[in-house]
Amino acid sequence: MRSYREVLANSALRNVLLLGVLVRIPVFAGSVVLALHVVQTLHGSYGQAGALSSIVTLCVAASGPWRGRMLDRFGLRRTILPSIVVGAVCWSIAPFVGYAALLVLAAIAGLFDIPIFTVVRQAVIAATSEQTRQPALALESVSVETAFMVGPVLGVAAATVWSTTLTLFAMQMALVFAGVFLWVRDPPLRSAEQGGHDKAEVAAVPRREWFRLEFVALCVGAGVAIAVLAGSELTFVSAIREFGAQQWLGGVMAVWGFGSLVGGLVYGALRRSISTYVLLAGLGVATIPMCFAVGPLSLGVAGLLAGALCAPTLVASIDQLSRIVPEGGRGEAIGWHAAAMTFGNGIGSSLCGVAIDAGGFPAGFALAAVLGLGLGIGLALLVKVVRNVEREGRPVGIC
Image 1 (cartoon, rainbow, N blue to C red):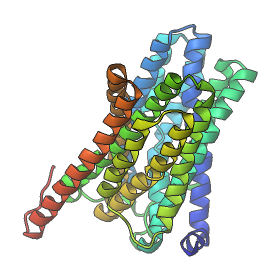
Image 2 (image 1 turned 180 degrees about the vertical axis):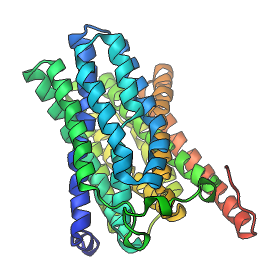
Image 3 (image 1 turned 90 degrees about the vertical axis):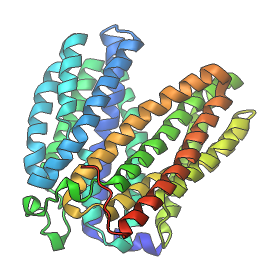
Image 4 (image 1 turned 135 degrees about the vertical axis):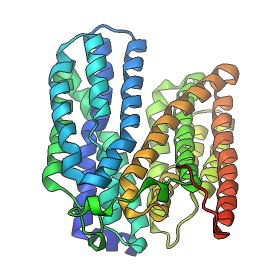
C-alpha cells in the first residue's frame, strides 16, 4: 500500500489518472452504440456491423504510430487540434446518413483518431519516477478497466432511452469534447528534466535510436497477450453455451475481469518488475486449466486464476517500453504498441474461433494457452540473444 500512497500523493498524477477514466468512457461507449446503430436503425446485418467495426479498428490502429510521432515532434495541442476538427465534422454528419457514407466518415475519423490512450500513458510515465512508475501504470490499467465496464453499459442504456442516431451523435461528440478537455488541460508529456510539454520538438528522438529488435519483440509480446485474452473471451462464450448456462456468462466474465483487476494491483505493489515474456508464458500456463472446465463454477474459478496474470502482463509491457525507449520517442512507440495490441485482438479471436469450430471450447482455450506459453518463451530467448549481441557493441536495428 505504501507504493500506491506515494503515487496518489502526487496531485499531477492523480489528475492524469482521473482524466484517463473520464476521456476513455466515450471511446468504449461509442464502439457499442455504433454497432447497435447499424443493426437497429440502418437495418443492416451483423456482418455489416462487424465490417464497419473492423475497418474503424484498422484505421485507428494505423493512426497510432503517426499520431504518436506527431506528439513527440509537435506536442499535444498541435497534434490533437486537427483530430478535434475532423472528428467534429465527421461525427456531426455520420449518424444521419446511410451505411456507405457512415463507413467512409467513420474511417476518416478513425485515421485522425484522438490518441487518448497514448496521451494518458505518456502523461503517467512523465509524472513518475522509475520507482513509482510500476504502481502508477497498474492504476492506469485499473482506469482502463473502469472505463471499459462503465462505457458500454452507459451507451446501451442511452440507446434504449433515445434513438441510436441521437445516442451515437451524443457519444461521439462527448469524445470530441474529451479531446477539447485534453487540449485545455494540456498535461505534460515530458518529465520536468526534459522541459515538460514546452520543448516537444527539441526532445524528439530519431526512430533509429529505439526502433530495434528488442522493441519489436516487446510489441509482438503485447499483441500476443491481447490475442490470448481476445481468444479466451470468445471461448468463454462457446464454453458457457456448451454448458447450456447462458445466464451465467456475465458472472463468469466478471470473475475473470475481477481476477485481472486484483492481479494488476498486486503486481503494481511489487518492489521489482517481472519480464513481460515471463508473465506472457505464465498467462499461457494459467489458461490451461480452463480447458478442463466442466461447468460455470469450475470455469469461473479457472478464469479467476488466469485473469490474475492478464493486467500484469500488459502493465509490464508498458513499463518495459518506458525503459527501452527514450522520452522523446515514446509517443510513437506507444502508438506502435497500441497498434500491435489492436491487431492481436483480431488475430486471437479469429484463430480461437477456428479452433472452437474444430474441437469445441477446450481447443479454443488450448490454442490461447499455446500462443502465450510458446511465444512467451520464444520471445524471451530472442531478446536474450539480442542483448548478448548488443553487449558486444553490435546494435540490432530495424530502421
